[in-house]
Length: 474
Ligand code: NAD
Image (cartoon, rainbow, N blue to C red; front, top):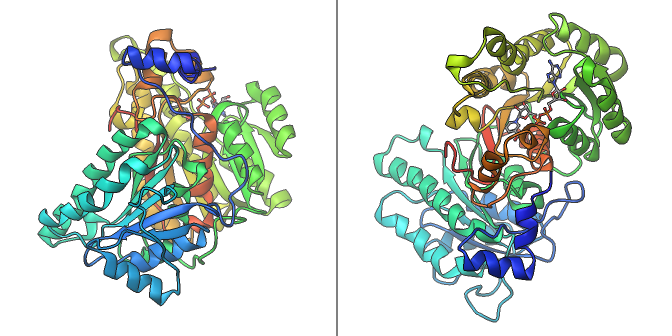
């Protein structure tokens, strides 16, 4: 469904009209049109900074330089020494002063805040970002690196590293107006070597609707090998449930774009749509209800001979049956719980016995409804929160097999599900986020593809919201 308000405000008249009335003017987001590139930031500038005592600058600079961006520094800032040392160690050239008005604008601001260990030292954030932030062009990217607070015992360090979450979320709300995103990568012990893919994802056009989020990067799964994101899904075999339409169809398309062989599964009643989607991407259709008691065995039978097992499973099939709890029937409760949550556990359990290759990565679709809750969605909210708990519970077991399990929590996305909402709530749902617009199925699909990649081996047990920083449950 098209967003008429957004189209209107993007015309010169509409823009002035909206600004006169103080209405939001949603920015036009630039989304990826091609597969992951080797050097996505070729020809662009990235300004890099660090705090005193920063520990992640080498990993940051190495990953940034590999994107093709020209790296620049701010002279005289507190963490110049770690940045310069990291650059010298890796023979990376650092150039010019981005605060100079005649310098080209930096598309990316990247700051290693891992050394900040006191309230006073948080001032280094202000010193770096304050002079630069207004110069970031539209659809820019800001990424902050920190140490994952959960593993820290030292009081000052834990306090300051946690404070970075509030900084990142607030800055994301300020800069969303021009389509710029701001996210935080929290690096746990052993995660330093796995920074490249998540950083690249956050800096790319593949994450246009991901802002105000934190993502934990930990040690890679057992036996995982470092590899670039580009090309990492080539030849992988992926199962996507609910693939006939909406988000599932988009996930199938993006996985196929990245070179995966897609087996799209959907309810037999959606076989027609499934066939069309699979024909479009050269995928293979499987008409099967996720709640069938033998679903896992049938999937395994379908994939083991022809495809040699699954490398990726995306649990996307989901439904709503909204009613206030006082009016909800038992059937409405049971159906949603069974499709959105019970089936995921049963299918995984079966596939872990047979059908899933070692190193397989599983991605489950949650929802911000499972984080913020929603009147009329006690059934749906339970399932989507349950999905988050399930991914956390399964992360260690998946890592032992060399794989991972993560969740993606969509915000308000333009699909048949949201088109069915009444106009008022639909319009509110679109605007209550930092980018003032709904996401597209492609936005969810891009994040799923990233989570499904072996290059993201340091990301496990996490839930990433793709919601334009929706205020709901934030
Ligand atoms: P959709 O209704 O457009 O598509 C869902 C697909 O799942 C359909 O093709 C449907 O046939 C299939 N399906 C339903 N029951 C099934 C079953 N028993 N067996 C097999 N397939 C079944 O929905 P969508 O908007 O594309 O949502 C996809 C996922 O994203 C869902 O899990 C949903 O909860 C989640 N989500 C969507 C939004 C949004 O704004 N659209 C927001 C948050 C989360």
